[in-house]
Length: 183
Image 1 (cartoon, rainbow, N blue to C red):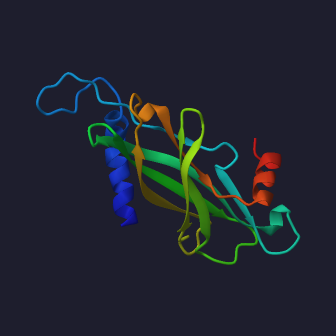
Image 2 (tube, helix red, strand yellow):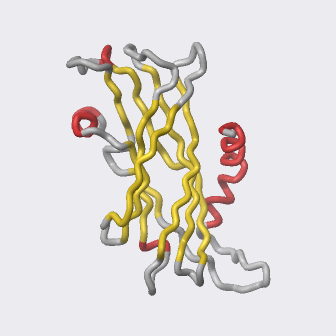
């Protein structure tokens, strides 16, 4: 399944980008109406990376079990219910690298998907866990997650008035570590 999603993303990536904008109509009956815009997808600054340390007080590089990165790699949206609802499908990639203290080949990392309005007010947020299988003898692994978000659109607004925000669900300690080390 993950290989299928990867192939799908590579083959359909250009279509995803063009499905949410551009200068063509998606109406098969010849309407000249431009497609409505998709919500912006962004990674919350400071939450794009995660560093997981082994249990205990050590916080040196030798204590790192895994480091991870999350990023959006594709997506598309469609409007439903007379443009009162946008259904956004996004494809995320979560990658990890084993650190010196790694003790498993299948780390699980938490990430979130949130919806915010144009005033940056968070309308909804959900936390997910994903497990990454690192192939034997390798230091890196990745997984792709397909997420579907249903966003009610207020009258007079479009998907462009909303943002889909993703990132790792960090502990206070992890967030502080990111602020100190990642530039």
